[in-house]
Every structure is written in C-alpha cells, then in structure tokens.
Image (tube, rainbow over the protein chains, first blue to last red):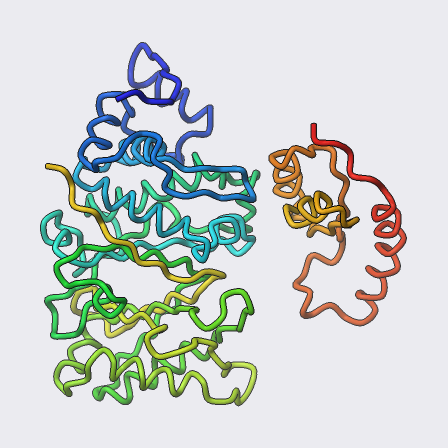
Length: 332
Length: 81
C-alpha cells in the first residue's frame, strides 16, 4: 500500500510534537505520531485504498481521502477498529447538506456532534450514560477529535484562516457520544432514519449552541415536554430556503426525564409529535419564537446521560442537515 | 467569496462585500480559487448583525459602498494566478 503523504523524520517524540504544533497540525493537544505502519493498518482494517475519496469542500478546493482521514484518526488517538466510524463521520460531514464550509467557518463557532448507534456502541464501549458528553471515554474522545482534526488539517478550518469563530467552543475538541438504546423500547435514532437495528451508524449534526432544558420539578410527560418546548422556543429556529424542510434539532433526553416517558408509555414518536406541534405555534413575543422544523422526525430525539439532573439538552441547529452514514464493518 | 469568483468565471461582473471579521477567510478563498489579488469590499462599521442596523446606518453604508461597488463592477477579473 503506497501512501501519498510526504514522510517526516524526527529525532524523538518531543521534536515531532513541537514541529507538528509549529506547522499548525494539532488542536493544541499532543497527538499520536501517524507512522506509515499505523496509517496503513487503519486503512487495511477499513478495507480502503489510500486514495479513496471520502468527500470534498469545493469552495476550499479540498478533497478528503481515506489516507487523510486515517492520518488524523491515528493522531487523534483512535484505536484501529474505530476508524470505520471516523470514515463514516467524515463522509457524513462532507455531504453537501452537511455544509462543511459554512459550519466550520462561521463567526458563530458551530460545533459538530457525532452520535453513534448500533452494536459498535457496546463493542467499543462508546459512552451513552453518566458523563457521556464529557471526557473520560476513549471512543467518544478520539472519534470526535479525529473528525475535528480532519476539519482542521484537511478542510483548512484553522482559527484566523478559514475558521472565523468569534469565541469558538471547547466542544470543538471533540463531541461524540452514543444513544442509550438499552434504556427503553424507544426506536433508536438510526432505525428511525431508515437503517437496520443491527447496523452501526454515525449521525453528524452541526449545531449553533446547546441549550439545557432543565426541569427538576415536573413529574409528568406533558409538563416535561412543555418545558422542552418552552426552552426550544426561547431560541427559535429560523427558516432557510436551501435547507428546506429537512432541518434538524437534536434533543438529548436525560435519564431523569426519560424515566417519566417510560413510565407513562410515551414512545419516541409520541414525544416528537408533541414537541413538533407546539414549536410551530405562532410566536407570542420576543422570547417565544417559532421553530422551523419541517416534520416531527426532524426533531432527533436521543436518550443518553446519567441519573441526577433532570434535563434534556437541545442542540440548536446551524446551517446544515444532520446526516447519518453506516459504519462499514472492519475487515478484522 | 467563492460565489463571486464563480460568477466572474461565468462572465457576470460581480462585487463582493465582506464583513470585516471575514476578510481573512475571503482572502484565503480568493487565493485558493486562483485569484489572490481579487478585489473586494469591506462593509466596515457597524460590525453588528444586519437585522439591527438602523436606517441611518444602512444609509451610511449604502452611500459609502455604492461608488466602490460601481467601480468594482466595471473592472475585469484578472486571469488566474
């Protein structure tokens, strides 16, 4: 297997780290050296040739290959078996409607989240429970970081260059988690989006900001759902001709809210329909805004998180669709 | 910026007006597109969202930019570098 990347030689790891940082090849944190052997191993495991094209950013004259993704996945600290998920995430993000150019260059500092569904969650230990959106879990930390390194190192979204975010976000280091599919009989996100339950997928969504719908006092599904509606409407979601009706918002339903939906027998579809009907009601003032989501399934409801805080996190969309792609099984 | 370059390639004279904070990426896109010296305009003050520009601010921007836009539209796109 012949790689296209120019090889670099260093006396030791410290020299490599300093050179990578000087060249702007890292997110500021240390990286794993992407040796040819490791990159080739990742590609072989995913059954990909180095020059396989995963996607492009035409406005930036960027074409992303499997080799590019493998180099950055190694650098991010991925285990080899995670690489098919990185490939799927890169393909999803570079889908035309994933809108890489806008979502990674915007002043608003939009963030990309990677939601993992299917059997690989348990095989790899992708966190979906307590603390799942934070540090401490290797697949969560490294798969999300690999996508961000591709966005930086290949797609040129570098602060001060094509990344123009005023603040940016610490969530841009990595934002990856799994749905807790075992928590209830809720239909998993990927099945709702047309994939088989036995398939594993990534769903990549670019969002403008996250808004916690914290409600510690409600004890019925209707009251909790109304809190989510109120929080969503406090921000509003505008329409966009290019995005059309397939705009998405992600609702990460925490354990303490989810248990009421389980107890009262609300399906995920029940919650989606309840929310959707109410976010479309006419605005009643500047703090109560219409949310332009085209249909109930456009609200991506995902169960995750641990016990304690009664909250649902809302990821309010940037100018992109959420895109779901299959994680092709590794060639073990 | 890329839209402006592609319109120029299609033979449509174009003037690109850019938010001050996006000048860096506009220059980068122009360079990546093969037109490093492509001229564009800086919208300048105010740096606030367009939705809250006052009528006076809009008038000021229009008065400032209109002659510059006219000048740019009459220039030929130089060949790619």
